[in-house]
Image 1 (tube, helix red, strand yellow):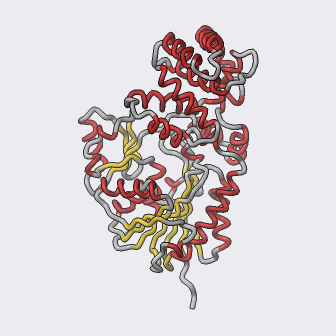
Image 2 (cartoon, helix red, strand yellow):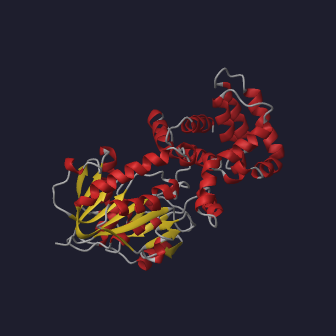
Image 3 (cartoon, rainbow, N blue to C red):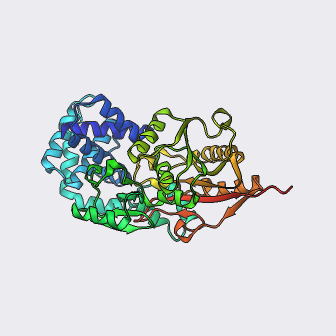
Length: 427
């Protein structure tokens, strides 16, 4: 418990200082290789759970303090410990005792009494404190105020549901490789192992409870992958056919790459500008027993990697705010800033304009983001169509959302899709 609280509070502080949570946790694992899987799981759970409801715990802590804390390390420790006490996964006396020990070794070590008093007062008044915190806008929404305002403006009917979905625990959804088994047959295999699930979409199963991939039948044989239902729509919308040349731009970690190759026998190029992330694509394809041409390069600079042969299909899964997958990455809420979106939109436009000449006449390009902000979704797609008169916007099926926008829901994360075909040039 001591190690869990110490490292979890250090990780939380790193995120609040601007570090990506995944990167911050990776550094912890590298610097503390002796941690057991159970300790890693506890540290990760404490960080994710605290970040998911960060403003709630800040509002609770504010009620318990006479004055703001000057030591940010102690504040992070208290936020972690408050969440742990509420989650009640360990005895309350152990949470308090170890938090006091961590405080004794933090900074000048003078906050032991404060930490002890705050946590014990929380235990005595937990229900009242939480109720009061939830009556505040920050404690109720657990998002930055500018984010709440933007959601209310963009989705006046759905904004609260979007925020609630962001604050929920994500489901575990599987994509069944239909080359090996039908969805119903794989569901039966899961049931034999006591894993309950429900069918979603064309080839997805959502598990009632998350499990280790080691528990999934034939996982290492490529029968199944873990992939959100909304992310599965990308390959389906591209409508790939055997023999086509396909570009998966910004391909890492390779979930969509594998799905495309499961659907048809393709000449596929998987592109990413990060060698380490590209290796993850290779690892995914190896497990699925599929192959593609891997290229390390910038999607906005095809002159550095393109062989000059047009593609029949292009998946432009461009960099974005990742605001649609916040429940999987709760640090996103606290790392993003309003000024980030102009930068994302400019980068998206640069990539789209660079990739469009690579598409064959009559081919299709799918613009995709995991965002819910219109500035990097509908606005970017509309501006692209204006810049390229030979780009015809194609209608999407109802299951792909309203005008291509999927909002986070119990079934899927948030995604945006816009499908374009290249019109034949008139002689």
